[in-house]
Image (tube, rainbow, N blue to C red):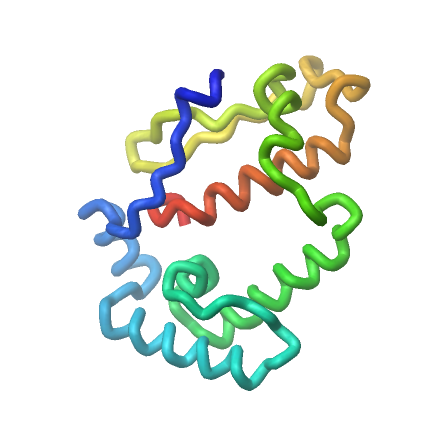
Length: 159
């Protein structure tokens, strides 16, 4: 896969099908979104040990998987911060270009450029016989999957 073939879809507007799924499965309505964003901002002000931005896009990354429950989103934010702290030796300063060769040259992971019939991203992982740990270490694999996860959180359709 060449890097020119894959593009993150950062549009904040969900497709009609995804909007329906979000409303039925995630309780996502305009009023609930507004209330949850407001409450999460309040919670962040009360929890000064957590340092996050307060823009809608960032807060939505944490609220959507928590079905718009602000307290659950705050707990997720805390776990994410702890994860980054606990894995700082592997994640500090990490940029996609740091793992570009592992991703593009060694066929251990591939995010399909298209989506499946339900609009979901498809990740193919080849860490059985095709993975050569002398070329892509376990630490590189960890960083690679972390980068893929971060990229997925940036796409509203994939959240």
